Amino acid sequence: MLDEPRSGRLAAWGNALLAGFVSPDDAAHHIADDDAVHRVEGLPGEGAPVGLTLALGRLRALGATGLRVALPAPGHPLGLSGPPEFNARALEAGEAVLAQGAGLGLVPEVFEAGPEGAAGLDVHVEVVWHCLPTREAVPADVPSLGEAERELAEALREATELLSRLDVAGSGPVADAALAAYRARAEAGRQVLAPGYPPRAVRVLELAQRVGALIDIAQGAGGDGREHGAAVSSSEIAARAEALRPVERTARRAQVAAYNSAVEEQERRRG
Image (cartoon, one colour):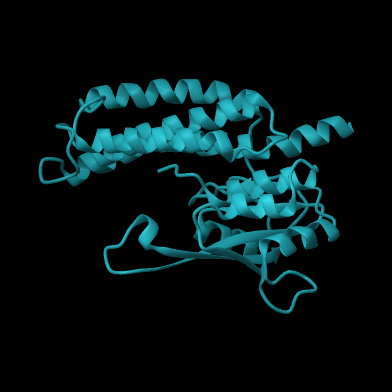
C-alpha cells in the first residue's frame, strides 16, 4: 500500500522552506495536514520536544541544506545511509527523513486516539519525530527521476496484467474502494509536492501512486473482486504477494526519487 508518507510531506515542504518558497508557518501547516499536532524530540540544543516551525528553523541553523526521504522495507534499505541505530528505527517506522548537511535524521512515531471503531475526523492523531544522528553518505538504491519514470511504466503494465489475470481489473467493492482512494490521493497530490519541485517529479509521484492503487486492488481482492476469503487459498495469496513485490518496490523507489528531486536539482545547480 502506498499512501502518502508523512516523511514525504515533511521533506517536500521543508525543502520549499529551505529554498525560500514558503514561510515557516505555511510549511508546518502543510506538513501536519489533517494531523492534530507534530512535534520533534531530540533536536540538538533543545531539551524538550518542539513544534515543526521551530524544528525546521533549528535544522537550518544546524546546517541542513535539503531534506531527503527514505522508505525502507525488510531487505530493502531504500534511502538510508546509516548508522545501524537510525536504520533500524526507520525500518520499523517504514519511513524517515534525512537532513542533508546536518547529519541528522527524523523518524515518525504516530499516536492515534478516539472512540472504538472511529475513523477520519473522529481520530485524534499526534506525530512525534525522533531526531537521531545519520551518516553523510549516498542514500541506498535511490534512482534518478528518469530511471524511476521508465521503471514505473513497466511496473504499471505488470500490475495491470496481474489484475487482468485475477479478473479484478475494474469490478467489485474492493477495486472500487481502492480506485476511489487513489483518485482522492491524486487530487490531494497536487499539493503534496511543494513549490520548487520540477514538473517531472509531480508526474512520477502521481504515477507511483497510481501503481500503488493497483497494488492495493491486487492484494485485497480475490478472483471475484471481493476481499480475501475462503475462495483464495493461503498459497495463492502468498504467490500473489510474491508477484507484486517487485512492482511495489519500484513504486516505493519512484516515490523517493520524486520527493528527493528538489535536493538533487539543488546539487546539480551547485555543480
